[in-house]
Length: 105
Image 1 (tube, rainbow, N blue to C red):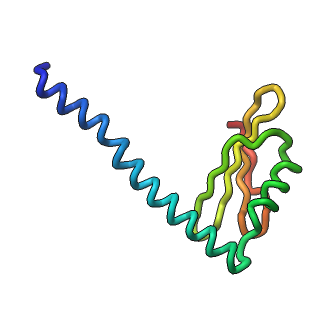
Image 2 (tube, one colour; image 1 turned 120 degrees about the vertical axis):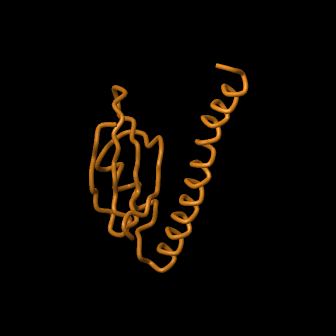
């Protein structure tokens, strides 16, 4: 393979994640803005309340939190590290704090 072709392929591989990541950042900002608006009008529970629910349900250290807007439903995802090194993913409905799903991660 000649050098020019190699460089074009390498650039394509490196550039693809960058453009995808920019789209993800825009979606994250939109989700965060919606979460703030929903919280301000009382449509969702506070993050503090939801964290308390998660900690009562799945004991351990919360190591990561994500917010997603799925079909107009605010969903919080928590990654909880439990004793013994087991990591669990907990999905919570942001409107009422209902646990939607608990998975092994």
